[in-house]
Length: 242
Image (cartoon, rainbow, N blue to C red; front, side):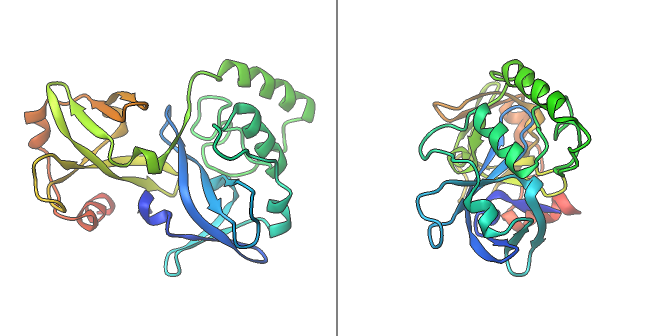
């Protein structure tokens, strides 16, 4: 099933013992373009704690009620490793979270979710000593190969073709099978708002200047404009699903 990233940020998170909070952002890695964490606003019951949950901890999406059911109770989340506010998420932090919750180490191996190809938590077959050694090795090996990026920050990035500007990012289409960003949706420059929406496969991205907010894709402008356009975001989803 495909969902917009901006739609998911309207979803509430349900622990096994009640409502936990609301998703207010998503983080993805800039290598495989896969959602790695949901940032949960837990201020109503757990102030002053930054809560990150991996899709590995999701049990079910309730589309009708816009809720994500997770595998943990509130006490489990309350005692999770600290993730300092207003700081980048370090490999050490990710290792602590993965160890605490039992998540797959997605950075280990070439598959989308590490040793598994889905965000599940079947990781107990590896001995503790072997896991520790592999963690330490891969933390150093992969330290500079990827960074986590905020979906909220990526919206409105400028998109450039090989010979000129194309438009701006308006949303990201996510598959909840692997939580991969399947398409980037852009609005073509100079066209009426809400019309002339186009999709881009992340595989066509050549480079991203994350500091300046520029995305460079492997298309010539005239070539890109020949692709199918959509009037609404709903039309985009219908075409993707269909």
